[in-house]
Image 1 (cartoon, rainbow, N blue to C red):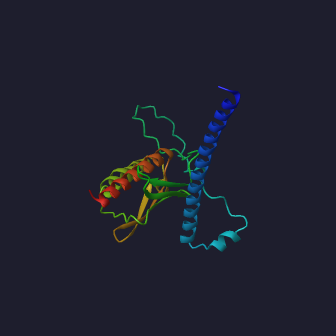
Image 2: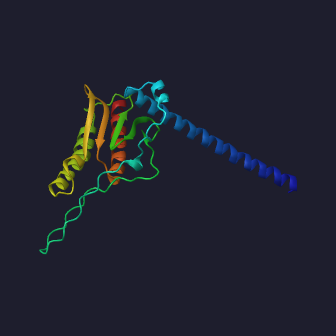
Image 3: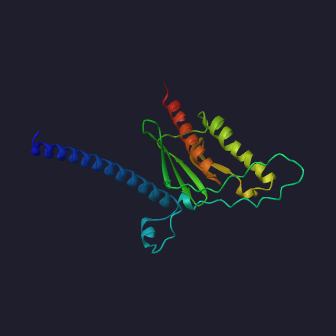
Length: 216
């Protein structure tokens, strides 16, 4: 093979890499724009106007997941001399690196289900408005509420009883409804391990609900 042929082959391979990189950048740009549109929508729902947002000269930094930190548990008490069963440890402070402030939840087929975003020490789940998720559609109540939310809450009640958490540091949740339809889920006091479980559980639940809503 001649030198020119080798050069053309290398240029073709380089061109392909550039095209792949450009496609990847375009996809990332679209995702960033979608997240920005979502944040603007949330701000507008909170009562801000676009002009009000631009006029704020030095706004406080938007809370990221790195800034969401639960109060640390009280100092451990001296170990008693009599042998006792070890007490369970309270949830550790949340500290998740490289996690988006706004996380889209989608089906395996990339169908939008909800948006999960972080504000102060709260997680907000906003279901896709076109889906009309109902609290009566399984497995919302029998799985997400009773087996995930309720169990986390019960565990924190035990930590409160042991003096490792105060009542205001307990895991809690609020389901905002319009009739039977879910408009928002607000979750408070989540540690890193629970965040991963919640993200997975909420996505799985909404996907199963969506499948039942579509029918066979």
